[in-house]
Image (cartoon, rainbow, N blue to C red; front, side, top):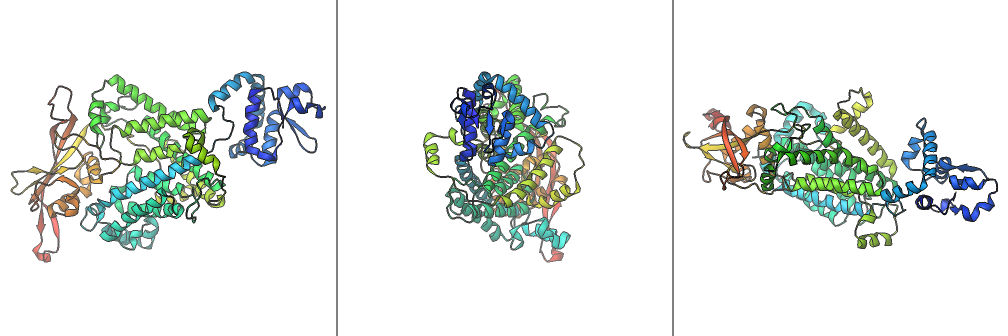
Length: 618
């Protein structure tokens, strides 16, 4: 490959191509070797690069670049695909000629967008950091479940896992094992549920400390899938799905059987897994903006997202606000509209920088990180934002990390171990197809998908690892809040207090993330509907009447510590943040809307020998 050695633009791109092709291609300055090729006119060397093959054949310009990658076998996958598109090569030749005529200007933009580093970016440090963060997030997720799993789906919990599995088996028969994959088919006792959580927490340390991380990631995904599939309504959140999808993709980043694998693994399978995680980061962010842009009107008929008024309601209507939410709620509407506009810019534009030059990609990554940081400081969304930021970390190339880390990375040789691309590629292809269909459906495109793709979608659905995303597609404009009360005489009612959700108006909203109190969260969803739409809530009241210690342990205050009350009911209130100048001791003000669930009591049946208890309205 012969190039103009006096051109800064040419030297930059030749250095970059040399980094890709290595010793398979010889690069020479035209000022040194032009005399060896009298058949090439001197002005041709000035206008374009010239590729001279061993048999003497010469190609020039864009064709020379295409041929160079072809003969060295180093063409990027996107180029191999693009060359099959009609008209691409002709357009590329035209673009090449324009750039060649204006190399000074394009040299400036090259340095502006890529910086001075000519090497192709590598992401070894990013993968090392991502895997450790993922291990920490898995640890948090399992520990969070450990302290509440018996209250949620234990024997004396709200929705017992064993009962759920029995119902599924009765309805689906042998098909139930495929439709609901979980280790709890072997044992769904309280001990087994706790054991799965403990095992997950312990195995997470293997990823954190790089001890059998490949096998650890496989086990963690299987354990979390098992708990998610018996968690029913309590483990149906988007971050549960995100953790499963991230975990499935991440397991292909490291060799599965090595005790302490080298973090400089760079086999094709590893690069495919990295690309799959970036595809996930793109969809997660872009779909979050897309669903808001296409959101139907809020319950009050207002197009809050398109009108840029969503934040006027968000801070006080989000499930578990922070104390900072009170202050943000007081900010001027103009500022809130501006913040919403910035959010749209980040969620809809920044994901595309994943494909952009180095500096643009770093800028996009920084903006997405900043958005997640703001969300963390204004609300409780368990490990969701931390997991999202871990995915964004995969965008940070090695040259952007601290100097000490970069020196360590460069001292180590690249390793070629890892998963075979022949195993990873089919998984990636299936994942991209299914999630691509979901992305297109988010755009409300009416497409008749081939039958095989719909079959694949159905087949993969039980794994809960190929998902669509988008929180708060419809912004709630009011905050109904359920207050559960108990009584022994039907006259005097005493309220139960939850640990985290609003109740006592003088209690300051607190930080609970990255832990997720799932009953508190589910109470927010229950308040948006009615008691008939939330059968779990009736079970919750029954457990309170029974005095279930597992469920009561999840509450902040039990007004009946010695003996459960005879009656229990739920009242619905409308909550709003106080304003500056209101009662200085109150964070909330509330107004009674009405009864959410009438008073109920437990009626023991003597005819059945006292074997069971059923709710009876008071």
